[in-house]
Amino acid sequence: MNQLQVLLHTALIDSGHIEKCGLLIRDTSQIKTTSVGYKLEQADVDTLVNAFNQPTLLRKKGLYFNEVYYSCIRTDNESIYAKDNNRGLIVVKTNIYILFGTFNDRMNPAIAIEAMEKLAKEQ
Image 1 (cartoon, one colour):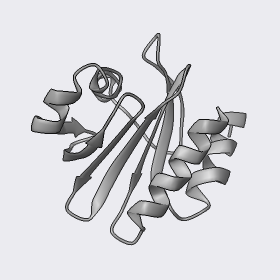
Image 2 (cartoon, helix red, strand yellow):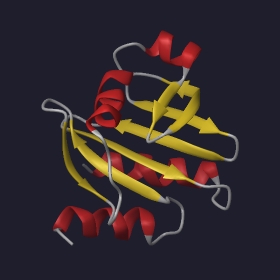
Image 3 (cartoon, one colour):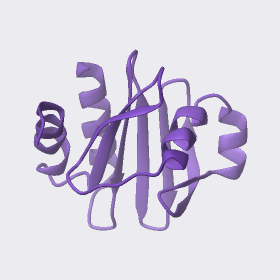
Image 4 (tube, one colour):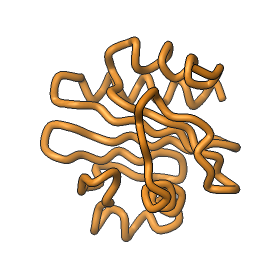
C-alpha cells in the first residue's frame, strides 16, 4: 500500500465506518488512490468531479456512481451526502482533492459522515 492508501485505511476503513473510499485530484480528475481493491471507471470519477457543478440538478436527480443510483440527501459547495436504501455515498471536496467513501447497512451514516469530514479537514 502507498502512503495515501495507508491513511485512508487507517482513518476510514479500519475504523469500521467506511466500506470503500478514494481520493481524486480535483483539477485533473485523476484518481490519486483508492482503498485496496476498489476499482473505478473514468465515468465514476467524472460523476464525482462534476457533481459539485450542478447542486440543484444533483438534488433533483441524484447520481449514478459505481453501478449504484444514489438519491441526494444533502449537497453544498463542499459536501454531498447520498443514499440508496441502507447504504450511502459521502463526497467531500478540499482545496486539492475530492474524498469519497461508501458505507453499508451495518454502518452508522452519521459516524461515517463525521469520519469523512474529519479526514477532509486534515487534507
